[in-house]
Length: 353
Image (cartoon, rainbow, N blue to C red):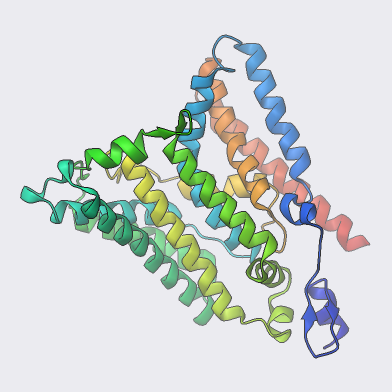
């Protein structure tokens, strides 16, 4: 093991020809380097909008709707965090979400009398859920194989998947949204609440986020994800199965996009083929704002959660404060550019050490 390889993954030679990956404290693994200041920004935004509209913003209804509206995007962003930490990108998640929703809706429709799934039971819903998640996973697997095996740049691969997944969804539906979504699904996952009024969509997103944080920050899989993003070649020489790991990461992202598609179907009661065109960019923006480096090797799930909520709070606050809607993308863009600029400053400071 060369000194260069050891430094590349920020670890040490263990004397057996392999690299011991860096061992950080639990707090360091969970939070990430820039999470604190991002959290301060989020709190500051909430304070500003609460001062501007004390009668409307700091209310239970506002925060409940904010959480519900952000749940689907958060699930997408969790998967995107893994991909970007490996120094990759996935532009297809929004269209994979649509495709998965179409597969789930059409499956439930086909299994129902007169192709009307409105009154379908839990058995039909369960099959629709499994196929929706599997459909997303297939797209993720294809992306992973092309990136890791064929060595095609992830930007090109996932840009192709972006168009292909949307085209496949349109071919299956004829370009017309499917609206016969089971009432049981809508009344439970879509609008149902538990634990004293907590929306079920929020609970699902919370479970996904907690599990992802555990995997990324406490397991060997997470450490390998960071190592590959820091230096792929050094990770390969230290014994990490880089190709298999990348395929798994992209497949995981596809599975989460499939889950997000089913959640979206439950909430809106339709496949929303015409929507989600910017979901991929929104997910990337949330992850990057949350401190995950586009250069790979740096990031955290907690940072992603905060990063996803910053644009959501901006949009919700602007609506409540009656700021013209045209200012919303400008504000989000400024925050995104500032986050990338901060990341570059941090990298330069680290490289000078």
